[in-house]
Structure formats: C-alpha cells, structure tokens
Length: 599
Image 1: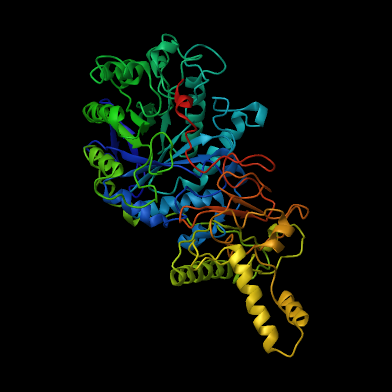
Image 2: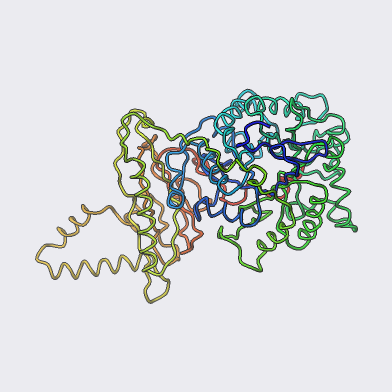
C-alpha cells in the first residue's frame, strides 16, 4: 500500500478505484479549474477571491477533487509566476513563487480541505492550443523526451504532496491514432509516458483520454459517429493500454452536450433516450471489457433547454455505471459551458443556472478523503521553494506585498468615498537581483497617477474636459490670490507631479482614449515594477479586453468587470493568444468555440 500518510488510489477487478487498501470504492466528484495552462501564472479567478474562497466553495458542495490544467513549457522554464494587482491583493502568497511551486501551493490549500488534485497537461506551451493534436510537437521543439522531462519535474516536486493522486497525460489528442500501428498511435505513447511517470511516482494514477475520428481507431474512424475530441475509446477493443502497473490505469474520456456542438444524435427523434447507446459505443464499454475505471475528465454544458435534458440523462448514467467525473468547469468564463460560480466569480444565488447545476451534481457520490486516508491530514506537505538571490534585500517580499495591499486598500477607500466602482488587473512581478542580468535595479516608483472618475451627466461630471476646466479655474483663482506669477506656479506643479491623463497623456502615448463618451478619465493602476524593461525601446502598453499591444484602449465603463493590463517588464504575453503587435484574444473561454470540440 505504501506510506499510509499519502493517498494511494488503485483499481481492482470490478473496475472501481479504492484508497489505501480500503474495502469501499473511492468515488471521484471533481471540477476542472483552468487558466494556468494558458500563461505562466495561476488559474483564473484570483482577481476576485483568494484560493481558499473557491476551495471552500467546492468542499461545501461535496467536491473531493480538482483537475488542474497546466502546460509543459511553463513547468520546464519554471519562471516566477506573473500575477495581476488584484491577484496580488487577494493571494499575496503567490509572490516570488515559481510555476511548479504555484501548483504545489494550490495542492497544499486543497489538501487542507480534503480535496485531491489531478495534474492535467492541457497543452505543450501556453500558445499551443489547440495544437497539432498529438502529445508531442517536434516542430516546436517538444519531442517526447521534453515531455518526459516535464513529467519528471512535476513528480519530483509533487509526488510527496499526499493529495496529488494522478496525472492526465494529454488533453484531447484528437489527431492521434489508436491501435493502427502508426507512429502516432496514442495507446503506445500513453504506455511510454505512463510507465515513465510511474517510475518517478509509483502511487499516481495515469489518466488516458481517447482520440478523435481522424485517423481514429479500427472501427472508430467514421465521421458520422459524432465523437468528441478525447472521447473515442473504440481502439481499446483491440489495443488496450498496458502499463507496468495495470491498477494505476484510468480511462478518461471527454463528453459534452448540445451547448458545445449540435451532434447529429441530439437531433434524433428518440433523444434523450438514445444517449446510453451512444455512450456505450463510444467509451462506456471499456470498463466492463477491460475492468479499468472510467473517470470523465471533462463533462458539462450550459444546463439550459436541450443541454439540461442531456445532462439530466448523463448524470444518472454515470452514477449507475460507477464512473467518476470532473465537471467543466469551476470557471464561469467558458463560452460554451459556463461554470459553477456566477459571472462575477462568486457563490451563485438561489434560482440561477449555476445553482441548478450544483443541485443536479449533488447526486454524484464523493468519498470523504480523510475517512479513506485517516493519516493523510497529518502529512507534512513538501516545502515551497522561493528563489533566494545572494544579496537580495530581506524585505523585498514584504515590500512587494505591502505596496500591493496598500494600493488595493487605498483604491477601495477612495472609490467607496467617491461612490464609484473600480477594478484593476495590473501585472506585478517582483524580481530578485539575480534575475536582473546585470542591469541596474529600478526604484520603487508609482505608476501613472489615477484620474478622477465620476457619474455622467450635467451635475458632477468628472470627464477629461470637465476635469481640465475645473483645474484651470482653480489655478486661475490661485493665481489671482497669489503674488507669484502663474507661470512660476505651473512650473512648480509640473515639477512636483507627472502628467495626468488628458492632452498631456495623449501626446505622450498617442492613445487619446481618455474621453470616449464614458464620462471619466482613464483610471491608472497603482502597481510598481521592480525590474527594468528588457527592451527599453518598447514603452509600457495599456490594454482593455482584447485590444492589441500599443493600440488605443477603449475607455471602460465604471464596472468591476473591467480588466486592464500594464506590461512594462518586456515579458511574454499575459494571457493565451496575446502577442506583441497582434490582436490579443479576449480573456474568456478556454474552449474557443463549439465546433472545435468535435472530432
């Protein structure tokens, strides 16, 4: 059984999972949490609430596992994670953490609540989605050896985390074959990768997803079958995956409903009564045929109209079949499925679709981890390894956290007093001296000063024009009351403060976006930058939503949903799809459209 202070899951002849030699089946009721796969940073949502908020929410609704998405490139580089100003305020423990240790921090917080973690490779690199549909990409320099190196790094750091129970080897390898004797046979690739991971961490489960229809598998390459990416396990009939430890194998298909794509069987006159036969032919047969557990790696949808019918049939089917499940997703910003929290990343109110989802998912069984592994709660988690640069000021982290927290509180108080909403997602990156590459360290300087935002209308308008008029009137009054010439006072003011938003800022960065009919000046965040720009010729850029780097950002409404990003450290794209000089993808769903999911 191994160390009783670690959670060991393995299967038996009945095709079910058991924990630490126990006699009761271990049931997985999990949720997907995405975001960390798309850039060098944490999963999404921390701009609204800390880690504990979401983990407490999942635990309160009976979830005992999360499927945490990541990418191999960020693991191998293991840079200090990039976090926004709001993320810094809500979760200051992320400061100075490297990517792998960020995953370890999340696992540690989940462990305190009895939540297991499955590490799921969603892509090879942050910008490699949907990618080539294989588990490797030689053209990008990601051969199988580099993939193994990434899994080895994760095993070295997280095998000792008692609640990290397994790995999902590759998300939706839709362009791979299965059992066709080709070099791209996923069943053989999964065997090699799975056995490598088991050498590094023998207690971990190995989750293997299905393929698509092209090239598919023998008897499973018909486009009319309507396979989802990752759902096609037909090849298991003739070429099952064989691991050195068969008890660690789990098949993990992805299954979706009409809100993701209108497959032909959703239009059948017998719908939804026809669905069990579809599921049996696509993946469900594998449990009875090979006595291997099935845990759906992704499952979900909008849960309205026909999609609600579909889920109301699928959930009892999974319970009766003994399948575990990771619902997609915790995040509310998946365009074709929605999430478990509401659009504001908060606990859903009664009567909402999200609340209805949670009620429907209550029928899924979930094993209490502390009951299955009584000694696990006393296990000491692996230490988090923060970079310690020689000669680094010992108060560097405190300074970073203090500035972020002070800025957050100050803006909150000022906004409350002014009666307006605000939001910032300014990027913070605290860099120790060892990473400055010989450059002089930048001092702690505030960013551009905040402008005034107020209500629109004749009374109390605080737009750029109104602000300038008020400023000029005040200065004229001061000039008349003073014996000093006006020019001298203006010179002193200009010396004492940097230029504000308006004509001066427009001349400086060419944005001209301060007054776009929204009744207020562009607010400026209060972040600090500890690292000088790698490319001094490229100025800081200000982005709103999907605006391209260097382009004028549209003035936001006074809404808590507005997300603005400043990047002054010359680093890579903040989110997936962003690149210098090109239009950036909006920060919405990881699933980029319904038809993408169809094989």
